[in-house]
Length: 270
Image (cartoon, rainbow, N blue to C red):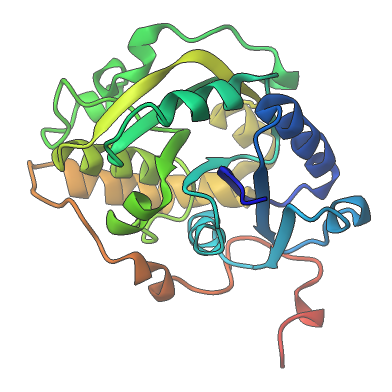
């Protein structure tokens, strides 16, 4: 049976992947799906036995890895996810069925989520999902007051490709998601907030992680030294940048040097 939704993940925590897979079963109900995870570490054997699970060995940054997994997607709809989260029951099914009532492939569903340490986090106010609720985009002339904040999206696969997917000059999955959302809205695409909270993730603030890890944390290092300056540069003035080339992922390094892999030598030819 052909999948109706492809869930794509750049993952480094295989110990969480069975929980994620089982939550998708609960959330999709009878609708078929596929889970595609890219990353450096071996998946659990029980997932490899599943017909609707695929693994792509990859050592690149989260953005490039996500773009590669999206290329492998077979469903008409895709969504991306972090591997430290899980979906709530039935909500993916409801969202897929709702999306199918719209004929415009440019219709994107912005998936609401909760986040917090050990999955404990309050539901976000609706204003949170507007760019100008947040200090950074609000301070940039290239981000308009009506722009909605895209973070976790459900989007037609071909439209994702047409828009060029994520800009792989960004390394971490955060500001590149916002960048895609802004470009979609400039292109007259529609971003609609999901009626339900779809998922939850185990999240702590950058400040808390810096206290523990300092600059040794690859995602924090990438955000502050690459992604943030790039986003500010792109949106410090209004621009007409909308569609980019999907093959931009090929310009990103195949090995993310900010992250220290413990198994790279056995997979990379000397």
